[in-house]
Image 1 (tube, protein in one colour):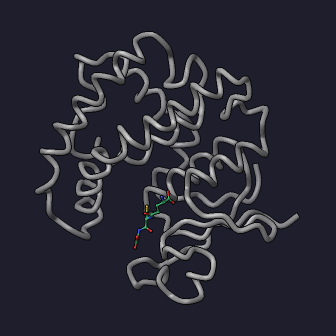
Image 2 (cartoon, rainbow, N blue to C red; image 1 turned 90 degrees about the vertical axis):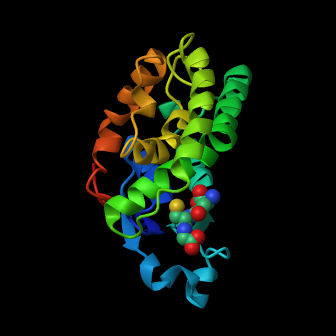
Amino acid sequence: MAILKLYSSSVTACTRRTATVLHELKIPFELIEVDVLSGAHKTPEFLKFQPFGQVPYIDDDGFILYESRAICRYVAAKHPRSGLIPTDPKANALFEQATSIELTNFEPSAGKAGLPFYLKKLGWRDDLTDVPANLEILDKKLDAYEAILSKQRYLAGDTLTLADLFHLPYAGFVSLGSDIMTRPNRPNVARWYNELVSRPAWLAYQDGVKTTTEY
Ligand SMILES: N[C@@H](CCC(=O)N[C@@H](CS)C(=O)NCC(=O)O)C(=O)O
């Protein structure tokens, strides 16, 4: 069987999300670098596989899939023993609740607050105008996270799921310029975040995607 190919730009948040889950599941993959700075993701050839002109997409032995969270769900579903997607109906419902929290309550403000820090670090853009207002929104959202995480270890219960890992890229970007993920007034958010960023699958990533062909 051919090795899974990840077509993406190694610097992007969505690639980080996907690659972290692939590392977590120890799935060998090859990153095919797409040069987003030169617009390679907007070419007709690329649009055949990702019609929105965004990264990433995967080619898994001829099966094409885009949307980073869908890719993560697909690879986790192929490895059900990982537990990253609970199968018990109630546990699965709590997992869906948690993934929805990430998408609707976390990413909008964490993305807008975190991306400017990251682009500044890369030297691509130096405009932090939107950061304070979005940190303020995120601060309130994280109070709700604290309430949840004071009762359970992870966002969907006491076991790690994709819902937790989905937070990593933007939580990491936000932390480049703010201590919002680790403030003492939210000890359980800090515990959760510190545990996530200590995971080998995330650490494997810190200097860009480590393309892996074997584990
Ligand atoms: N919901 C999509 C978002 C894809 C997306 O926005 N990708 C960004 C990188 S994280 C991108 O390609 N940006 C360049 C562009 O939109 O032109 C996913 O999770 O894959």
